[in-house]
Image 1 (tube, rainbow over the protein chains, first blue to last red):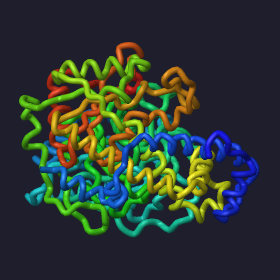
Image 2: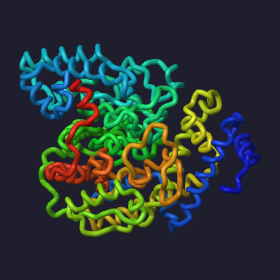
Image 3: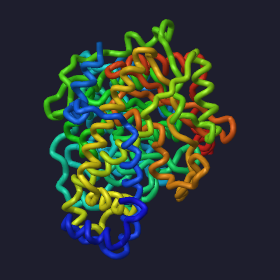
Image 4: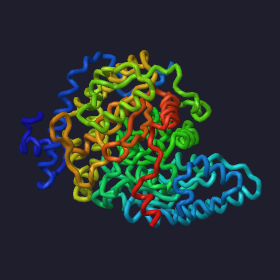
Length: 68
Length: 472
């Protein structure tokens, strides 16, 4: 996904999500989808552990733990 | 009409509380000033003249009867129109929500400011559904900057930035998901506080991206910011993310200065040598606060990318039904991003949440070495309304997301931040610098902000264009 994503892929994704994207919006949505793909690629740099994956939503608890 | 316009909230509260100035006089002057400047600035979406007058009369009667009043007695304030106000439709900057019934209760933070004696004078403009850094809005027009009305106010708390900078309300309430308090504070020349995630309850406000949304105040000086913040604190069960913490008042320690604090300068991702005005502002603050080390802050780029994806997914999930039914009624600039957010794979979202957790751990490690971090707030001063691109690291990129380039990594992990305003010598426009502290240490950000103010480093003058207009 990313630069290779084309109009056909976009329409297929939209169909799967049950969303009809009117023709005038399609180019813009495609641009933003490519931006999101580029952002997702940057996440690969982070060396994650199982603990990170297990506690992804516990932000408040983690912040409280950090307040010593 | 201008007598109270740029008076500090603390001074108004004191004068009204002692019975030296009637709250009704402050409110009348404020309403007249709003009527004069709002047509050009477009910062209020609704002015609540009747409610404000009623409240002022009741307060004056209380004071005359010797009943004690709060520290914000008679201080006008206004709230971004995603805060519920009883009897007013909560627009959240959208066309679609115009069809909603009016709210039946005030948001908790509005109740708290009123309990301290402040008087709500109106609801403020914002970018649609808070997905904005510019202050532009296809449905309601651009909210303009009082320093130069051809320029952006910043967003998405655009009305909050514009109204408070213009002297239409000494305190305003905004929200900050990725920088929406700090960006308008930077572009309009204000102090803005984004507290720790979970510190202030969001009960009675319209969400954008639940795991990233924060509420907070903007003001024209650090004392007013601390005063407002202290009045806003406290647990409320209406917000599941609100931490069960006792209020931690910041005013008593505000004058304690920065002695003993280890202050670092954000480097790496936050290097702003491509943005001369931001670079100069950061250097001035670093010198004034005696920042001794530059921090690499590795992981900031990934943290920002994670915030981008989480915002996109959570925002899109919130609006998916409206996107299916009424796509044509969205602002063009939000519609296409929300639609994209409905389509990309769930594993990116999970990965983004995990990276966010990892980035927070990196930052908590950094806070073993320093107590406070200095970083740029925006890459530039207020761009002209209609500007679409910004040169970032040699590449022409979309302006809208990149105004939040430096704010997004910190809100992604819920750290408390105060944006302080400086005046750029090059453009004579304001630009902000972020003071970032560990979780729950808003007091450190505020103390450093006060120290900068005491040294005369931060901006203290009303917008020159507006002063000229006031004189005519």
